[in-house]
Image 1 (cartoon, rainbow, N blue to C red):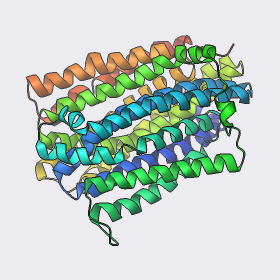
Image 2: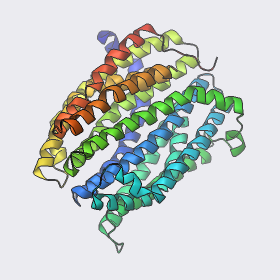
Image 3: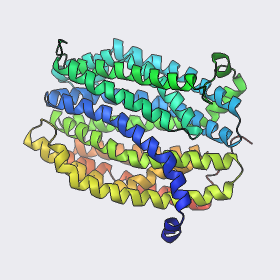
Image 4: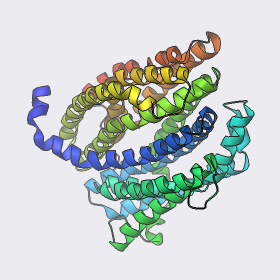
Length: 451
C-alpha cells in the first residue's frame, strides 16, 4: 500500500489541492484563538482560565452549527457530483435557516446568563467575573460565524476552498490588530482586558463574513443563490436532510459535550490544571488541523465519487487516504514533540504550569498518528461516504464510555495530577482505530444518499 501510495502522485495532488486551502483556512481560524490566548496569557492564569472556560461554551455552539453545515455538505457534495446546482442552493438554505435557529439560542444564553455558564466549570469569583464579560461581548459574533460556516461548507462541497481561506485571513488581520488595541488600550482606546479580546473577535468575524459574501455575490459564484432559491425547499427535503444530518449534529454536540465534560473534570483540580489544559488544547487544536484538513478533503473526494456512481474508486481512495493520514500524523507529531518547550515559553504562567504544559503537549504529540487515523475515518471516510450512524457510534463510545469516565475517575476520585488524568483520557484514541479498521475494509460505509 505504501509503494502504491508513493507512485500515485495524481491522487496525492488532487487530495492536497483540496486539503491545503482547508488547512490554511483552519490554521488562520485557530490562529485567531491562539492569538487571543497569547495576548490574554500575558495578563495571568485567571484570565487564561476565564477565556478557556468561555471558549468551551463557544465550542459547544460551534460544533452544533458544524453538525448542521456538515450534514448539508454531505448532500451538496454528492449533488455536485451530478452538477445539480439547484439542490445545492436548497441545502445551503436549509443549513442557514436551522443554523440560525440554533445560534439564537446560544447567543441569548451567552448574553443573558453568562454567570450560570461559567459556574458549571468553576466556583472562583474572579474567573466567573472575567468570563461573564467575555461571553456577553462575544455573543453577537455567533451570528456572523454561523453564516460564514454555512457558505464555507457549500463552497467546499463544490471544491472551492480558497474563498473561505481568504475570508479567514481577513478575519485574522482584523482580530490581531483589534485585540492589541482593545486588550491593552492602545491608540486612545480603553484597556478592556478579556472583554477587549471578545470585542476584537466579534468585529473580525463580521469582517470575515462580509468579505466572503462580497466575493460570492459579486462574482456570481455557483453557491450565490437568491433568497427565493435558498428558501425553495419543502418539508420532504427537510425530513430527508434531518434523517442524514441528525446523527452528524448529535455526534458533534455529544462529542463537544464530552470535551466540555473533560474540562469540568480538569477544573476539579484547580485553576492551574484548567490553565494547563486550556493552553495545551489551544496548541493541540492547531496541530490537529492538518488531520482535519486531510479528512475534510477526503470527504469531498469520496462524496463526489459516490455521487457520480464511482463507488469502487471511492473505496480505493479511502484506503490510500487512511495510510496518508497516518504518515502525516507521524511527521506532524515529531515536529509537535520537538517544539513543545518553545510553545510553553510564550505564556505568562507559573513554573508548575509550564512543566505540566510541556508534558501534556508531548503526550498529545505522541498520540497524533492514532488521532489522525481516527479523524480521517470518522470525518473523511464514514461521513464522506454517508455512513454517519457508524461514525456517531464510534465517536460517542470513545468519548462517553472511555474518555469521560476515566477523566472523572482520575480527577475526582483518585485526584491524580493533571498529566496523568490526560494520559488516561488518551486511551480513547486506540479504540477508534480498532473500531474503524474493519468498517474501512468491508466497504459497508459507502451509502449513496441521492439515488
